[in-house]
Length: 470
Image (cartoon, rainbow, N blue to C red; front, side, top):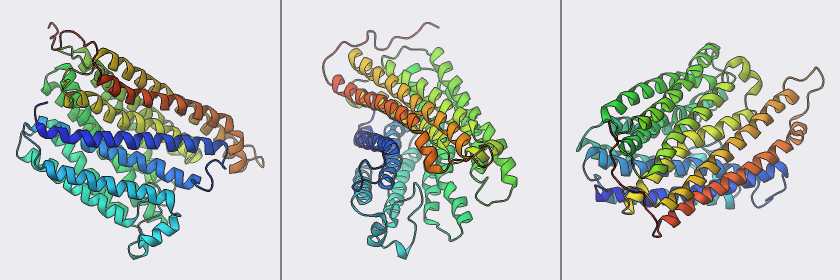
């Protein structure tokens, strides 16, 4: 490790993984509730479990992005972090705000939580993914501002690389677009129109810049490919991601009231969204093929390639399956949406955070060439179990979504099933989804276990800095 302040990343990564474990547990609970709605009631009803599951997803990824940035930026900028103290304060403020909010969801009825937090003074609550009380949203803004300031000042006083500039652009976008969570108009059309400025422009816009920067950083470290070569690929990928992602937001405007030209714009530009993800697959595998050294952290290389493939499948292929307006007319809000969401979030963002952790945690623990052979074997088991489990979840939800559309939305005249009757028919798919969820959970457990194994003495890969022949 080149700079002492890079160690700031460790508590962010550790807490991110703790929240990840919590998200998985609540996901399993929801999987049971889809099969038997009385599970957990009245202590943890479905609406509370769903809020916790999705909010933990967002918060742990933010912790992961912050930890990754605190590790990456000093090394790229070739200088210590501007203010390690501010990073530590930011961490604890975010921890307290996040834990308090999750406990609020679990211990207090949502309407009562709104009353306690004086939501009537500045109403922002009640929207999916943005259920946080207004005071929590203000805390998140302060955390983001201090974080972006710290990263930005580090970059300003150090070396300006393409990776750093792409990363800070994505982080600034993350902070700016979250401000739309405070805009809560009376018009449902306006509300949904600007709600997507947070949700879509995060996950299909600026988060993709963060993804590209993190992936490029890891590939430089584990392959030794010339920085200029990787940076050219990064420029092209993020350009395509922004062009397709920003206007592709129109696929959310099909049925919420905006002008009908969004049917065409949303369909056309959404159809382009798989392109940057496919380019990311080619990019990752090409860089590994052209590597100039054999880095001993082989599992980090596996995560990098896996991130590109799974992001392409989840965000690209499964996104395209139901993004065209004539198809989306029938599939909107079905289990096909859930299939796409699960695989896209895991492939594009969860995996890149775990990729960064897999590369950087051994470095911060004094093992710059990666963990022991045994630890990497355990981690590889976790990698494959998570990938297989998530693909199983995705296929189960895809089948459920197709059957849901057939039963509920395009049946023969007069024979449509109600929503609840359809859900009863779909139970076998939900049982399969729960089974694959347990496989995924086993993968997460193996991933965590690999870091326990890493702390024990074990056989190392030979020739730590082997350079491949030209």
